Amino acid sequence: MERRKFLYYGVGGLVGASFTNLFPQDCYGNTTVQGGWVRPLANKFSRYNRLIPKKLLGTGSNRRVLLHKYLEKAIGPLVPHNQGTGDCVGQGFARGVDILGATQIYGIGMRQSFKGEASAEVIYAGSRYEIGYEKHKIESLLRHEGSAGIFAAQFLKEFGSIVRDRYGDIDLSEYSSNRSDDWGKTGIPDELEEIARQHPVRAYALVKSYSDVRDAIVNGYPVVICSGVGFNPQCDNCNPGGRDSMGFLQPCGDWNHCMLVIGIDDTERPGALILNSWGPDWVTGGTRLGQPVGSFWADSKAIDKICAAGDSFAISNYKGFTSNDLLDYRLF
Image: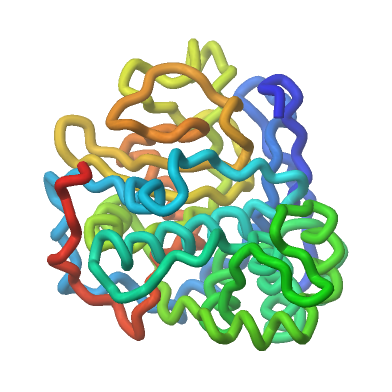
């Protein structure tokens, strides 16, 4: 996607069972970027969610962990997805599943193999239809693009995920925005539901602050973040020249978007490394610590602001969240 041709396809403002269209803007009032996060009623959904266990709290203090390094051992250099519709929630959670699986194999040493990357379309469509519509009875969700983080987390736990491959007549080997749009209105095919149930993400936890995100990442749990906080890299006021010399972007504009935290550095400049889903070229500027193309660092205060939206989650393939002391920190 060309940097100056960002379009926004998502909506926001879930109020009861109806929507208010909210097109995210940069600090000049221009409509920007392609998103797709639907603002849930945070109090309605988040109050029932499990929080980061107390035994993990504080474990990330003054630590540096880059979980994407594990995924790169499986697939090579990490290139971000390039979404073609308002399915950012599916994109963020799908890549989160990829990193979680790779971390379990290469970081923790679980006896598993990496079979392929997760289908964003399946997670996106399932979060909308099987969870948002069928479980929560939000009929108006099907009239618009987009989804919510809590719906994707629930879908992964209750239904599961599917790696990119051919399944009979259904070819998921390549990403299709049309498939996201179509299945997002009808749900995923029944035969795929049975396959997905074999690979659930068994647990998720609401993260409420930067320190929660930090502690989850240090223990091997990727964090999917959903909020209206934007990071416009073209703004001469907020981010002149794109990322600064340390790879950071400052909050700028309103995005209604879902992204993935893939690393943290709680040392000299506390912050989180965020992977977007607009391909490799949407942002330029400084980098550090081998960060992937299409990624950026955000300061701890920006992460606090994102988490305040109440729809960001650490995910785990375990039955419960446990403290992992077996991560191979030599990669960092």
